Length: 68
Image (cartoon, rainbow, N blue to C red; front, side, top):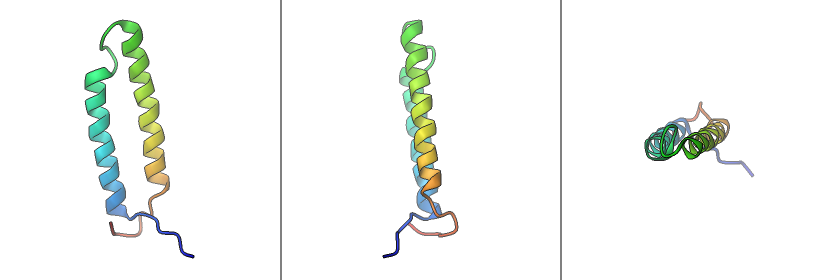
């Protein structure tokens, strides 16, 4: 059975949505928000989650296939 990987456009759209969500979360809970401990801690946790989700999108996308 052939595995279906997402195409280039779907991967780019996922990265765009992830970027918009990350920017909103950083403005709301990220570095420098609240007391120093929670601001740095939440910002660092959001950064790690963003990197992990970005790697997941990039590594599971077939960038040579243009489709949704």
